[in-house]
Image (cartoon, rainbow, N blue to C red; front, side):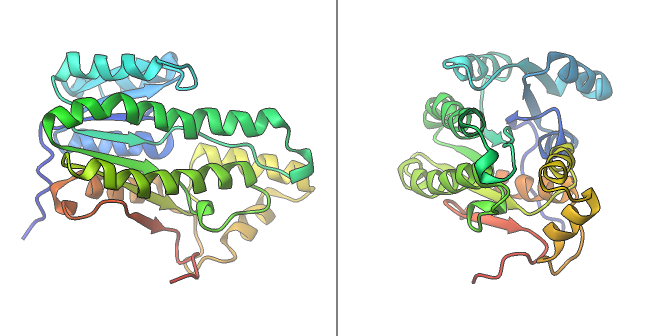
Length: 263
């Protein structure tokens, strides 16, 4: 018997929706009959994504926005509600952090990491929760990353942000549960996105290693010796957004090719 997600005609906001995991999630949700509002700082890229899925224009809206700007997320929530009259799902997939050797990471690099991914996530959650409370229903999925539980010495800004988001996900679940709102996280290991390619390039320069050497180091601890496909992570996000996972909240699902060695 096929699993029924019951997501047809549901509405999702996806931050970081123009690239990588966010974009793959958007395509999957649209194919499942959902309405999607794509959020990105690049209006040009958002428009190209809209053109790419032109046959689904009725289901898609784009909203260029910089999540580091205070109050910007309130406009996102208002726009989504005005267009679709509901906010069922929020997927937080925005944010990247500069890697490198600790002594060479500037204060601004740390600040940029937290301003976008951590504070951006807090702001957008705070903006959509009132709508979800009124509905007595909602699903929030944070795309965090496996370095939140196992910090990487060459990715300390991102590792620190991820650890903070894991704490937020677990702690907020208890407060939101009484309103029928579930919040969970997906924690991918190394995934084949533009972001990780750029990171491998940056780390190769800062460590005087080749990109292949950097990738091999990242996959060395994996049981499955490959980068994850963003579509694989998108499937987990769809699962956590659906009624299939109705008894799951405050949980992190790890998809890291067996990288994690803890129980």
